[in-house]
Length: 507
Image 1 (spheres, one colour):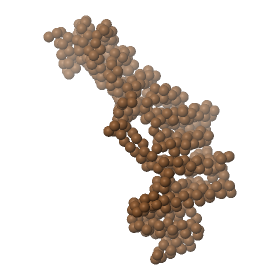
Image 2: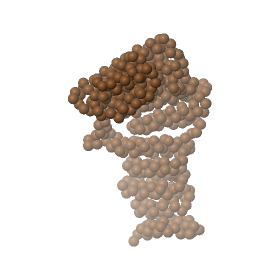
Image 3: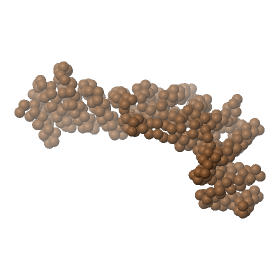
Image 4: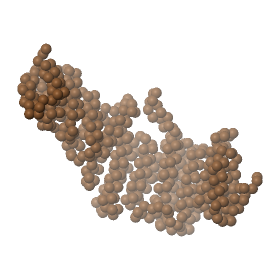
């Protein structure tokens, strides 16, 4: 049996049953005086692969680093050797070092660790990069050490650059989540500018993964929130410039995303963060970008390819987004020249061009009902919520005549369009029971909105009765109808009594 094979067998035994502490180093020195003289590189690496585990488990990083230096010297002497003979043992060595350590930062800072990794093939580097980054994420501690951060992002680039057009969606998601978790672990504390510079570098390095780009914009928004908290909402010239730089970063970055709803959500979040920090013009720019994007969203999104191709209708995601956007528009200040509702008007025009809402449908009807609630709130002398240090329309316009006239015109239009939608739901699908059921439910929702947000008068009372009777054309929502009728009976006033009388009267 060759002597190197005997050393390997001895190394395996030492790993399983370590000798007493006082003789561990002397045993290692005696063995390695001979092992380092092995000229056959594959045999040398066989022995090294075993003893690196023994050293990593029983000695400090200093000894591991010295050992790796000897490995590098041997590999460089045999560079003409077939790479396939050295990749496997080298990968096994690096893997054992990473798995054995309790302090990954010390391992990554070793002078000879990354040079060993550089000997590996591209696929091996990707595999080990994933292992190291996963180990770092598992530790749970943040870092601001520049050497550590540089090394981590070199490894992250290894796995990012392994992604191409043929990479499956699951692999993309796993890589994205790993890189995102690494980004979250880097924290420079109160040095926000340094943190922003890091995110600029990340944007340049990780261009192929939407999830990473999305996370970077979220991180930048969190920097703005931190700045707001540090300054208790009172920015000076320096912090104001920093906030503007962060918002500019987001405005430049968001269009690079492929996902339409990723862009929409980020535009809205950035507008909200901007408004909280008093950046009204920047917030308005984000909102306009979101509104302009809505008509471009297709009716169906196609993800994946081949057998994994997945088709998803976008209406289910678009409706809650638009309603969320509209609720934010309540506190957003109107424009001194374009009027108090110029953004809402732009939103109304945009949704008309959204493909699934080109014809009457339940989704568009729900949207109009939500916008009716919005404008009913716009009519209040004091809005139910505000953004600190930002004047909303109730303060800026004070319910003056021009404001009330414009509000009434839009509200009248919304009421008419909602009625048209209700009628159109059934006309589009004649003799369709589901369409009648949807119409009935929407009619009852409309009734309850009128009851809770409108001052009752003759025209409103007539509309309530008409809608309630429309809902009663099918028997699917009888419990909902009874609860609605009970609600009307409990309300005080002559109009409500008249409505109750009409609804209880036999047809």
